[in-house]
Length: 198
Image 1 (cartoon, helix red, strand yellow):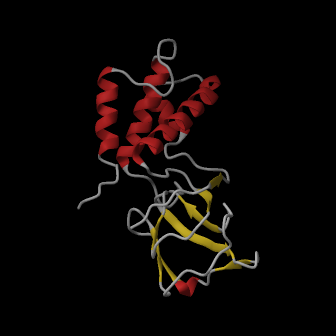
Image 2 (cartoon, helix red, strand yellow):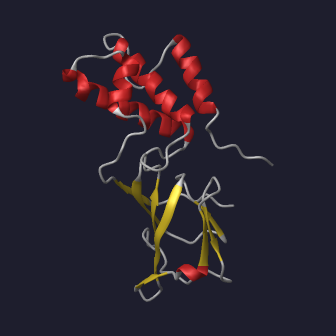
């Protein structure tokens, strides 16, 4: 399989729901003051971003657009997981016209990790040369945190980081952990990383 590097990446969020609700996080932090809601929301978002970075998981729903200069091989591995749906695959042909790939010409294998797009035709269409936006893939990825939720390990890691930063706000720097918290966090996220076998 071929994990190819995009020339351009864009994400948009539509009222994302965090993997752990504010009320649960406040209980976990033993926070009682309502005037700290915004502070804790900041910690939740930072912790979620850190867990996403360290695991490769997409923990909130987002719309993603990837642009590439060339087609890959028959299989396109997608950098986000989970993938809910492929919205469109577009390309610019050698006449500089924009076209969309018919969804009958590819198979979106979104249940596997990594999610992948499998070409069902002999070849991808010809595209314009030397354009960083020659190929565009648009998709919806992430857990919606309403009907499907991230693994418990991811949610626990977010709670752990949030509580650590909340209790140590004077001495801790967001994005860092210390001692036992770091060890427990590492074990949680290690269990969520993508593993490849020969």
